[in-house]
Length: 196
Image (cartoon, rainbow, N blue to C red; front, side, top):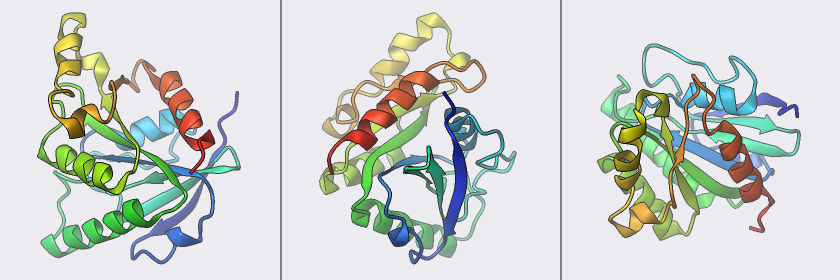
C-alpha cells in the first residue's frame, strides 16, 4: 500500500496550524532521537522530513498531509538543539499551544532513544499530555542498537510512574531495519479513525 505524504506548512508562530482541519497525530522527541528518519520510514517518502547531522533543525510545527485525508505534525526537537534560550522558549509556547489547543489532534507519539528510556523532558511532556487528556504512546527508536537481552530491561524503563505507564507498552522501532514501522502505522491509523 502506498502511504502518500506531502509537505503542508511550517508554522513558527501558531498562526498556520489552526487552519489545518484534518485528523492528525504528532511526533515529538529529543533532537537526536531520529525523528526525521522515523517519519521518512513511516510515510515511505524519502527526504520528506529533513534529516541532519546537526540536531534541532525543525524550527516550528511542520505539518504533512498523509494519505490525502490525515495530517502528521513534526514538532521541534528538544535537548540538544543549539538555539538561543529565547528561541527555545518560543518553541515551548508554540508546541504547548498546539498540543493543548488542536481539536483535530488524536494522539501524540513520544520518541525516546531505546538505549536511554524516558528522561526528564519526556516525563514532563507525558505529564502535560496526561493533564490535557491527550492520548499518547511511547516509541522507542534505534531498537537495532539493543541486543535481544537488552530489550526487556529497555521496555521496563517506560514503567513505574503513572505518566509513564499512561503511554502503554512502547513500540520498539528501527528505521535501519524497518522494525516496528508497520505496527506504528497500524497504531496511527487506529488513532486517526477514533472519534475526537
